[in-house]
Image 1 (cartoon, one colour):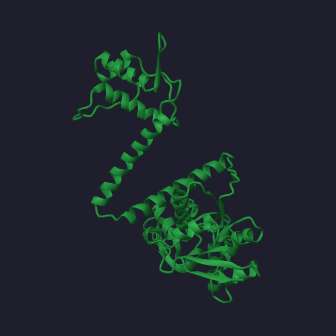
Image 2 (spheres, helix red, strand yellow):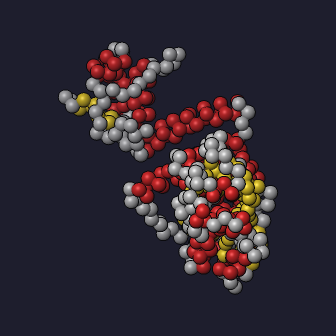
Image 3 (tube, one colour):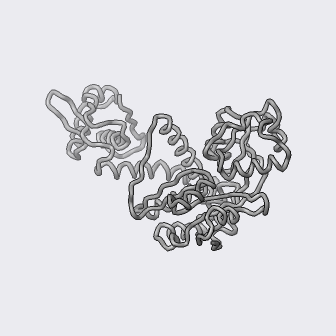
Length: 381
């Protein structure tokens, strides 16, 4: 039986309440085209109302094109969830759901930036989990081939995900494709013409400098714009309460501690390997060192599920999965863009958002980010 609840203080007639709630079920996809609604007698008995009330509700649905009544065949849903007639209902229902939570959070003293940061983190986590399910089922996405496109390849970052979401919202006509291939993978994609922009955070061991030496080495003689995106705090993520009492790199050698690592070529992996060499800790002494994940969220998820005890990542990823976080290292995350691409509409639109005060506030609220220099640009060749 379908779920219908009457408002105790509502002045709306019962038949209209019934019709409205059935429309919401159709808009949400819980009632599909061709599906039979309960008979008048069944629904009247279930709701403890007069059969005439249900008849009036079904007549209203038929008049609005949401259902069809057939003699001897009952009443059947005729509208689809993606039908233009239901789009207004879907948006209204979503707005009501979200606005209630927003007002409650604001009344408790949370700022709009805190709300957007929390929403972005949870949405990023949901997308990550959906992507994992699609990989498991063999689902693959394809490039649309739009000329008005932006191909981003490089290191995974939640603030970058937020930037892409804002760009999509402001410019829905832009086709944006993001590939998490690690920082080195991003620079190689730029060199091979497979990307318009790369997100990187690569520490050069000899100079102690971030990103510039790698850009000059991988893309010699090519004029590039290096846009400072953010400083990030990298640290250890572990279960609530730190049950294994992990305090630093040396704890990775303990036999009862299992780590989860990032993939080769990622800036996080480069940073970890450098710090291990600096501390004289051979990877072979670390249980789980060969267990690799492609994103910070995947590392945090592995720890949250109890598959590993510790992993190196960013604070925002730890927050999204409710794990504890121990800050260890400060690093620089930059956007690398060929100068010739800087004049394109997608890149100009993206950089405009990057420099906005609103964007910087939300990124700061995500945790573990410093946006004091966000948007500053240096040109190298």
